[in-house]
Image 1 (tube, rainbow, N blue to C red):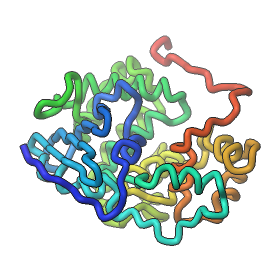
Image 2 (image 1 turned 90 degrees about the vertical axis):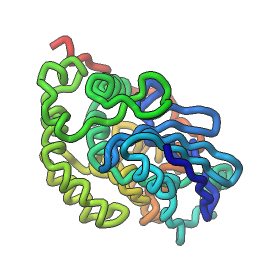
Image 3 (image 1 turned 180 degrees about the vertical axis):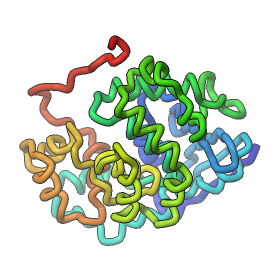
Image 4 (image 1 turned 90 degrees about the horizontal axis):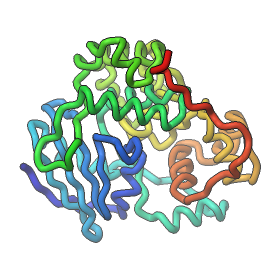
Length: 302
């Protein structure tokens, strides 16, 4: 067990900052407490469990497992260290400025773990959140490593790339993952070392996106969903999302827009477009509920 106390140089709201890393209330890799979070981490040095608790302006961190040193060393970036807000100005937009004022500790985390974030995004391709989370929970419960230390019961560590490559077709089927997504996940796992090396290129950007999209089946949406979490890219925009353009449109101009319209609305904040998205999501704003919804499909019946 290792312990440390991190004193960030800026305000940090621990739970809201890390919330985008979770995949639903039953996610076996994350558990939430008031002002605290448990997270399992597949570090390069082995599995680890990390517990973070906010105590005023400081964050107490405790880690267990073979990867405990790596997990502790990653705490500052996980809490937003290096997330540069310079040049980010929303003062001309009362809605965004209001959200920013209410959430002064909102940062963009950087996990430093590409395959974990990429496979999670692959499972979310072109399906509902319910389907994606169901698949994530099934596969992690089945193939994940038991969380080291005194983690809450049932927590698991994301499996190694070698495990993902060997998952049989019938288990993907039971998880409700169709052949296209399962093939993409296996392909990503087969080039995992190269994917992890993209962390050396910084906080996302065009070259990182290009390398992620070199994996067959990974498009712009999946690449950007990965970069904003793994690399901490403050400008990643998930073009092709079923809900986001309408959410951005309703929040910023009071009407739905398409992908092109979303990019036009976000253009004034180039370099910080993911930060704008985070402010909209954290504001609690919800677009009007009408129109068609995506159909939940159960691939396990076929």
